[in-house]
Image (tube, rainbow, N blue to C red; front, side, top):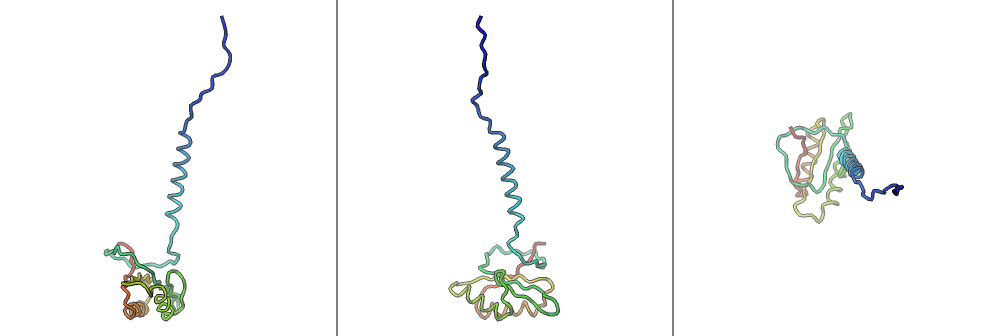
Length: 135
């Protein structure tokens, strides 16, 4: 009677732990990318039930700096004044037909400042959309 000694090596590979790791990595990346906010300015936009699907070519943001002063941004770069907004828009959109500009104005910004940006858009022939939050 021969006694066989030794261990048999199982040549199969279990990928269940690898799929668990990939699932957790995918879940982490999905959560991390949704936390990244491309809009670095904290603006409280007014609420509206009308939402446009048109893609704006550039954005203008107005932020209340207090004491009757306002900060103007074109594509998140501060431009100083309304004249700086016009120069920056002309520079960005000089070769674009039917340029569309998205206006992001904080709730606390007075209408005079919003109208100034509207006048700049009208003078230069740009379409202007006011950005709002969904209701």
